[in-house]
Amino acid sequence: MPNTVSIALTDVRLHPRVAQQSITAERLNSALDRAAAAAKPFRDRPVHTAIALIDWDHHLPSRTLSIRLHICYDQIARERFEQGFEKRMADITAKNKYPEFDVPDYSGLLSDEVYDIDLTSSFDFDSMRFVSPWRRQISDEDSAGAVAAVQASPQFADLKRSIADRPGVLGELEAVGWTPPCESGQPQWTLDVWWLTSFDGRIGRGWSFLVDLAHKDGRVTAAREFTVRAG
Image (tube, rainbow, N blue to C red; front, side, top):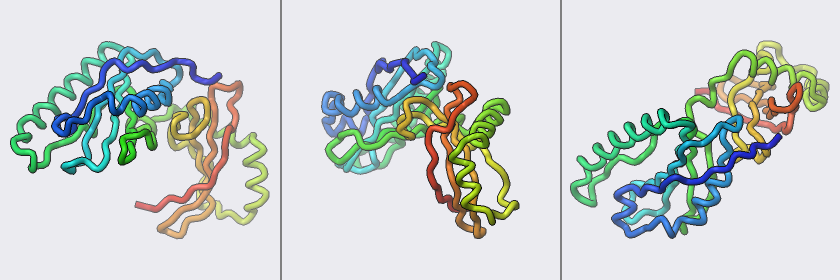
C-alpha cells in the first residue's frame, strides 16, 4: 500500500544570511508545500515535528537557496535536533560579524529523516534528495527479502538471459540503500538492489532494481541501468 501519512510543517526557519536579504518564507510557500507533499515518512512512521530550514548558498546576493527538511518521529528526536540546531546557530552568530565574511550553513544537522530540496533561481521547487545516513543501514531480513524478490522477478530473468557472459567475479545481487518516493517516482519506499554487469577498475555499470517490501513476498517495481565511478 502507498504511504498515507501526510506532512504538516511545524515551523520554517530562515538562515540569517537569507533573512538579511529580505527573503521571506512567504516567497517560498509553493516550494515548501511541494516539499511537504513529497516527503513520505519511512514505513508510515508518525511525524511529531517537521521543520524546514531555508539555507543560503554562500553568495551575497544569493543566486539560489535550498530547503533542508527535518522530520522527527517523537519528542526525543525533536530535542536532539534542537540541540544540534542551537549549536549551529551559536557558531553562525559567532562568525556573522560582517556581511562579506562567510558563515556556516545548516548542512549536516541530524533528525530521523532529512531531505535536501534544491530551488531554482526564482526560488521554485527543483529537486529533492533523501540525505539521512541511515539509508544504507539495511537489516539482514530486509536485504534477503529484497534479493529474493529480484531473483524471482521476470525482469531479472530476462536480464540474465541477455548477459550470459557476465564475469562471476562481479559478485551477486546486493541491497544497497533505501529509496524514498521523492527520488524514485514510486508511490512507496523501495529498497534498491544492484547487479553489477561490468567493471574496468574505474567505472562500474549494472542494473538497479527497486523492490517494494511492503508488498506480499516483495515485488520489483522498477529496473534501470546505472553507472558508478570507483572511489
